[in-house]
Image (cartoon, rainbow over all chains, first blue to last red; front, side):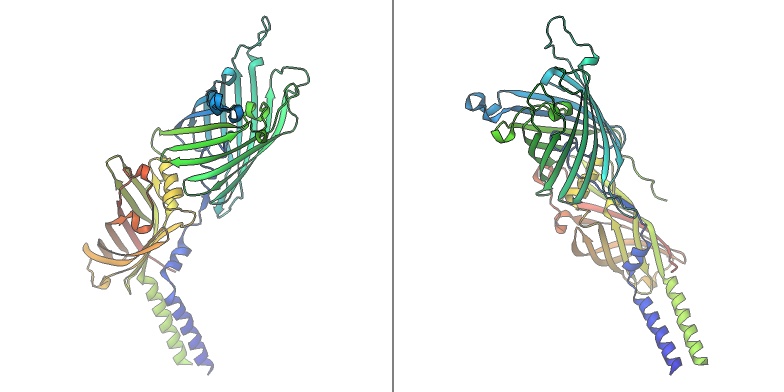
Length: 298
Length: 181
């Protein structure tokens, strides 16, 4: 009887081994790879501010953004469309992790340059990581000549700097959230009460409606705002539409500007009073050089 | 007691034999090609997993969608995000049978493979011809077949309808080596 049991057990194990599905073997043999989460946001901007997304190596993006006047200006100003602010920019992926950009805004005739660097990447699979983080730094040079005669600002006095840490998590394929601790430094201020350094924290999110359309929201809370003007916190809502090589964003925002130092610290309009600006971002991507391929066939 | 040992040895032996009957590759090659008046799109994958059981002729193939590499990185992003939805459907699989695998000689021959191809969560039966070369320590499979994008519920938006072919050509080249458990 004992022998019979042993034989039976061996037979059972044997049969089990035999019926082992070929896919189970493939599963066992599959290399344990780390999968980096992609497309936390569609574009490089949530709406006004930067998202965690970079352009990949070799991609040059031409970005044109517009913000019109306040919609509550009424029919005479065609609900703000008569006033227009534009920023156009070239933004380039130096590597998959480093992105550079230069832009020019009509508001205050400002030139800006920025760098965005991926520090951490959200991943799944082996040794997964729960969120992504990037460093963002920009410099803005204001060239408008609005000073009193004989009081011309020096080059250094025209400069402002913004530093941000962008922390984002894609919770699901449909929902992403980002938090942006921010520090803006101005080399010169209008009055002595105005702080040179302003701290702010932003929050942004995206909710995907279809494969190519998402709705985004963005809010920045300023801790120590400018005193000489009555500023408001930035609030914006918008829609992302993606078609082939374009990302098109339609935006409702209480800010008329498109660079960080300005929309975070200088917005004066109240969203809920109807001081809303219609705007859009449109980008066209061009690929320079071939996308780096992984090692070919072994 | 003696009978038990003999039986055990028999089972052990057949177990070993079975091990010899399976052939595996972890670096199989698959590519797909879309040709349209506007542009040609090609993507390669060198990390295809495939296993053949020569006792039954059964074949199983598993392809990680995110391992397809494109020339343009934006295409790769769109492929994963918008077309095959790799987060939801990470793998394409094929489960099929190679007819009369045991009757093959050492020279290259053309055989028929039948089975179920699953892409984007949709399973379809397909049948294709392939070239096979079988030896003691290698089974090589080569071939190509067309795939209708719409069969697998992959929608091409109107704006890029001229950029992507309705039927794409899938090419495979799988060199299997003996698999030991």
